[in-house]
Image 1: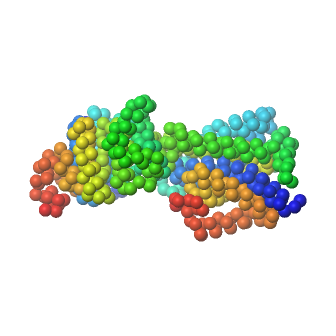
Image 2: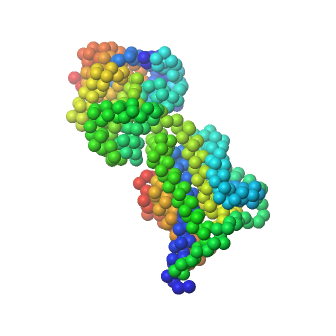
Image 3: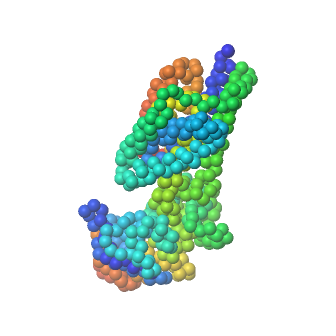
Length: 292
Length: 235
């Protein structure tokens, strides 16, 4: 394989991986914007979404896509419950308490996953994995293509929901000025609950989409959380378009670094990148707002 | 219309409001004046439900609204224009105004109110596609008031509308508020540090000092009051 087609291959791999990071990060940035908390459990929503899709597919015998689609409302419910139990009681009690609470929830979800899905690593098999397209020396499975399309369609749907619908605008208003939102009649409590549900649903969808590409493990949540953080650092807080750019960039970085240097050193490089970005641009590469 | 009886608000052990009793009748323009830190904003935030009171009763149109959430109080028609404008910076001017009509469904009526706001503040129509955060201070104040009017207030709570504006803008803003009160019959509770302007347009006034009402009278009488003159008008 010559260098040109190898680079192109990594580019294609990076885009499909990055599209999942986009979906993971838009949910993360949404909950951060509306609830003003750092949700440490966000990666666990992603992991749980992956396993839910896996179980719906393997145990309930659903097709892969119906399993993904069912995962979305199920994870919305999980997010709403997590909010009611672990986040809402701490509203207005400072910055640290909700973070610690979501950290506890993260470990709780991870421990449950270890109990429910012990042992072997899970991979979702779909017929799309058997269809391979190749041209110009580059080959990719139909699954990668569909994953990319599904992630982008969901992200676009979220963008239009936030820009065009009344409920979406109310969410944006709450994230921009909570008091003013209350003063025009928007219930902040309802918005926070809804944002948390939506955030978990998006993370769950991302988990469902990663299932056929990479095997699932209960420990994947924390790694996903760090990736979501990096995307927000790259793209800026609260910006959907920033998350799209940041997510795709991170996917490409991972693919190129993994393909050209070493896959095992990728996390090291990524975490070093966080430190460099924070030192040079504390507001993120494209961010205007402080991350505090 | 609004009856506040023996209101107390504490920040920790410190009383921000003590024994405050204030009333606003329908169609009145009432002002609460006082120095920085006298408790004026605390008073408005407590009426609108952003803050909780520790004692006392707030009634609006015969209904006890003490302890209700801010968004429920908004539904009743008490609309606060917060201090420092509080626009949604990353939404367009038009979106900000639309958010003011969040509780309404009737598109035709919303459109009509929007036209009224535009005729009151033509600059907002010109800037309707611009992000609110990029507006000047005066324009943001107009937007904040415009958004409040979109909520079709029964009682408008105005918090320091003159803050940070040039004298010329303060004057035109004062005229606008006076016009809304006189021509549209809007009931207004105005909190101001610009005592001269506030008393000139108000029907009645209260003087707040360290969280307590120390004086209440007709606005014209307060303008002539020696103590008010010395403390707030610098004469």
